[in-house]
Length: 430
Image (cartoon, rainbow, N blue to C red; front, side):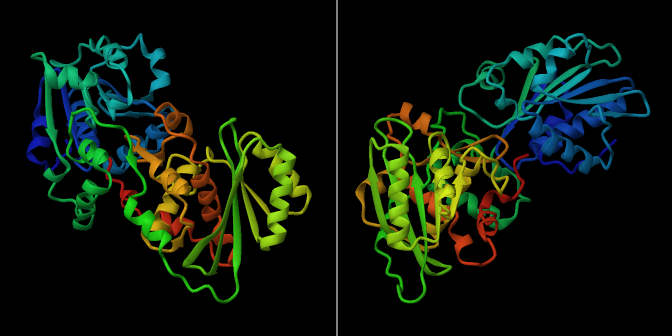
């Protein structure tokens, strides 16, 4: 039987004998550890228990839940994603797409990790129907989750819970063992990311907007007023955001630098309604006029044709695919990673931008949201359109240039170092 020096709210959950115990709490409150300990101890106490632990996505199950389990208990999971006890008990680990094949199983206990990832109570209800194995005096269905407005978890455990539903709630600050620098950063988050702070730190069940503004007005306006030394050798990078829709702009944004820590935007231009080859001609002209070291092109859609033609012309071009896997796993995709790198340049006062009100407005419109596993992602252009915002083409072009700026300086690529300095590097999303 594994012993855990538990906090009061954790102890309540661990000792609960109700049929459906739950923890709904802020980040860093040990939800995953508590669920795993409760299920592990249950399997040891009641021989021939069949337990199931579920996570919606396979990647999260593999990279988070399974790793946590093996690290906490110093055991190995077999190739079927199962752990077998000497007393005949078994813990199965499955993700959402595998659940349909389990409908003929009779379970003693199950746990749903990050249950708010499931949009409806369908999975919980299906597993609830499977709690009928007769090897123990009690059977339990466990849920651990972050608050997420008035969803199915709120309805079943918070709003009007039935007798068999038992829930404990806690904010992040109720865990006194978190690193002090992390706690201090959470408090700064109250201003920088108020929606995230309310939901994931203060465990608020109030309906929140899902996203926060990435750039503040202060840092954007301050960037336009920076005064950098402009003497010496220059390196120049041009970002090109290719128009995808009729009202979008194709934007050309050039940044240059005399040293690795000071970059400034020296040129920006845009047009609409031009053909792919006209855009290629414009890029070639700008490369010659400005002596550009590297061109970065949004390679999605028609951008692919621009990239291919520039390569044929021996232009130093880098294709950018925003949906690709990022270098840093803290981000949902490469576009999100790039914008958070741009954010750091603004924060560190290492980028001076042109005083363009349209660019300012587009930067202010960039918003981000969190996945329940802690990854950060920039809100997609399609979602921005639905919310009434135009495509941030000028901000995108600037972002493209800045993301690949280091490779022109013949220095070690520092993008990963910069990105991992963010506060979310710590794996506290348990």
